[in-house]
Length: 208
Image 1 (cartoon, rainbow, N blue to C red):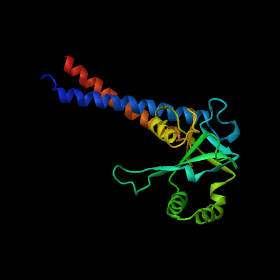
Image 2 (tube, rainbow, N blue to C red):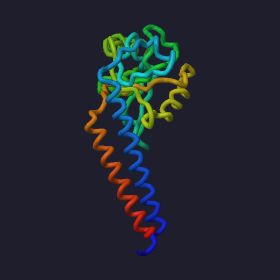
Image 3 (spheres, rainbow, N blue to C red):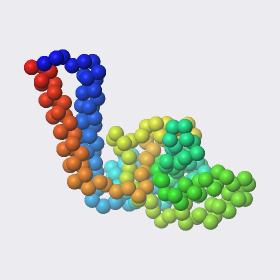
Image 4 (cartoon, helix red, strand yellow):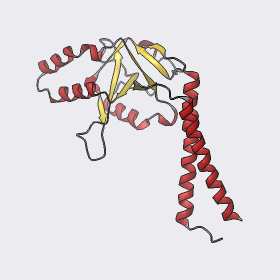
């Protein structure tokens, strides 16, 4: 059999990394599903005192600080909001350290964020915030904590650049998300194993 070209080898290397990545991510998702049967209630005052073991949480005791939020957008399209990142701070303490950063694409938050950005006076901004008090100060916020390969260090570094009150252990909470069912993790694992099996089979033919 002819030896593979450099580009062929590179393609199979990339495919093998993709297979390993699927296995890794499926393992993390299975871990979350098995260890988080129900959401754990966590007070905002207790976050930052040590590693957060629970990954599916109801965080309480705080409020969303939209004024210090920022958003992610597609390359070259800064007018398009893909998702918002909003600090969740202790009630009434907008100068406290940011221990929880909430990610959401909820259109209600996106609309309010745009309205605040377009408001031209302090009084109009304050009026918008008063009208949205229930949205910014909910009894609790439920979601999945990012960890492992999904822990976005780029987002954390950007938040640090925007605010000096950000500790290294800031928690990024994907609002409204819940653990994926084990069946989904199993399917990803099967696909990953299949890809790696194909790569190793091809490698074996090259070495024959």
